[in-house]
Length: 350
Ligand code: UFG
Image 1 (cartoon, helix red, strand yellow):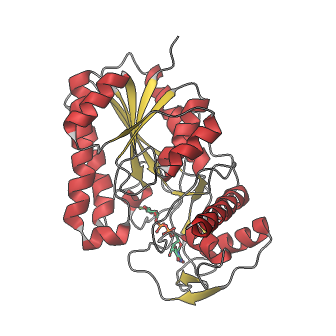
Image 2 (cartoon, rainbow, N blue to C red):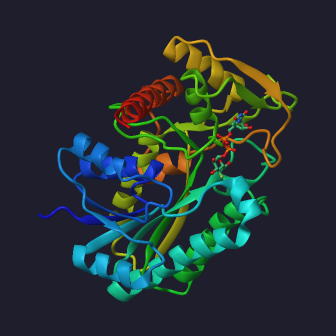
């Protein structure tokens, strides 16, 4: 039997590229669709080295209807994993229209084209940001959805609502929204990883860049939260565990193929909270380094603590995270060192 083709929109991005690996390893045929607005073509070379063949890639914007239609028809796509979206929280506050236009246009176009072509299975990238500042921890899928703090977060909430409504209307789609907690790490080969442009917003790339000497020190955003050590708590999940959750979700949709319409949401986290200081210490321990850091003011919009109850994913998708925080940080550091090596050799060539 031929391997089912899965379109991975945003497949050159951080989570997308790791999911391409997980899909290929699970016997699927991933096809990347990416406009490279926030990713680089080098990712495809990393994928080639990991998988031993060239992953098909369409350079197109997901909101470009005819390009998307043609790519999906040509590749005989059986299912879609939709990552393509802008994701910088702070930028979304400054440029809300650009975020709503980009993230919602891509999603609406994709769903319309799937319906036109009779493609039924879709996995949507959502986020634990939909829970805002939770009253109870860990958060389950039944925890209240709070008004989004940022336009980025709102595009995830609205995205989930659009998909739920389309399924409620009886459209022939089977959809799973995965609410990601904090993805970190890199493929253990060090051949693909996160590629932040400019100064990283997220904790782990900031830590690895500091360890590599690109930043003088990590600024910890506040140590006066109501948490055991005063720093914020998050659920950091290895990106390969997260990638594998997509495979588990696709398989679950395949098992549900007797249903014409289906929609559900799952938390994808480890179930363990770690504070910013825990992450710093785990990094030092995993990589045998000492990390310079200082305590700065709180960052607006940060919630004190959020971590997942991932029981539903375990019970219904048969998925659970099994990599440790130490592994994730060691893999992130391996990737950062490779990046430094590559940029160093590029600089020497110039
Ligand atoms: N942090 C620092 N210093 C830094 C960067 C981050 O102390 O230089 C702290 C933050 O204050 C926070 C923790 O590290 O307490 C994690 O911050 P990240 O920016 O890495 O992650 P967030 O939890 O803020 O955001 C992530 C994703 C978003 C998603 C959100 C959902 O980046 O896309 O989780 O909660 F919406």
